[in-house]
Length: 229
Picture 1 (cartoon, rainbow, N blue to C red):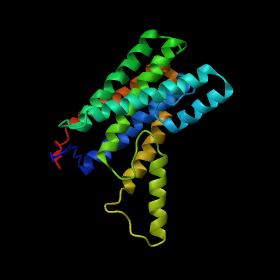
Picture 2 (picture 1 turned 135 degrees about the vertical axis):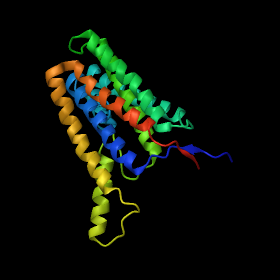
Picture 3 (picture 1 turned 90 degrees about the horizontal axis):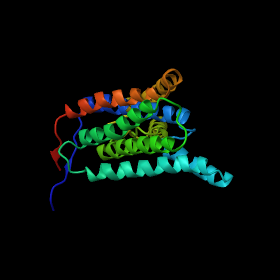
């Protein structure tokens, strides 16, 4: 059986890149929620609930917005899996994520007006694709108990581990609690930053996650190449 190449991110790289990606997804979610009609582009659990509510209420727009986000997210995950086997998987996925996020920012900024009508659905789709790419990339890293596009899993894993420790159960080796806490803190910070940026800049606030992602992509490119497994 042929050996599979997998991305090897150093512990130092994880402590920088994963919390940084939480900043990207959280700020994107905040800007999307405030500027694109109360829709999430990273949190698909919330979008699935919004889709069901929109269907039950018989409101086409309320259902179409989360449907676009879900479709974009799934497409992004598919593309991330097509990149599996690249020599620098994480860097490849993050570079690919830059494309729809840059298009999102550029299109919204060029329109120079509130997001209404057909363009709104295009913005949602682009942001959803970017978040799906990120989710797929982080999943392939295989870091236990850490996600960056939503935090329910991270909170559950951290709480379960710490509760188990109080009951005398051995912790996983190696424990990832500091990284989990960092991701949670940075996610909250990203929401605050995205909300403030949108309040003062409108659609131009999309430059915040785009700029952070560009720095993280450069950091991922600086990581040592993955090894054969």
